[in-house]
Image 1 (cartoon, rainbow, N blue to C red):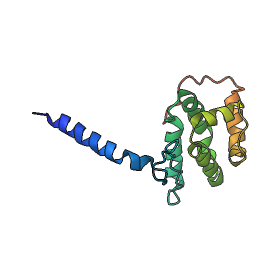
Image 2 (image 1 turned 45 degrees about the vertical axis):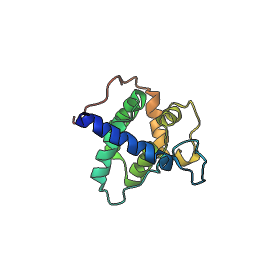
Image 3 (image 1 turned 60 degrees about the vertical axis):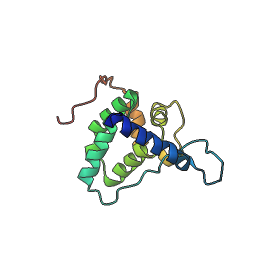
Length: 146
């Protein structure tokens, strides 16, 4: 007799295998896509400025790669509270629309040119922050509440 977890695993596996072709479908019968498309970032128009800044502070800290976690968390700690509504919108687009965090890092450090759609006063500020001219110690993220 199978245990409950074995039956659940089996049921889940059957469902995924049965639906997988539909999840990957390109719309053309029998044709497999080269990749699964990443969903487009949806703006949150009803978000208050305080909630938006809190979300961006969290997202600046939780990037999935240490380099951007350190770079963006220190940037947000230093500049986010003083940003205007337009600057917050630019920062939101910058950290949420690109699908690859390495791209943000390469743009900020000057290793790749910044695409026109992300070139803004916020990107310029981030590039200056990345240069760390004051030689600030950035080996840990700043505290959330200071």
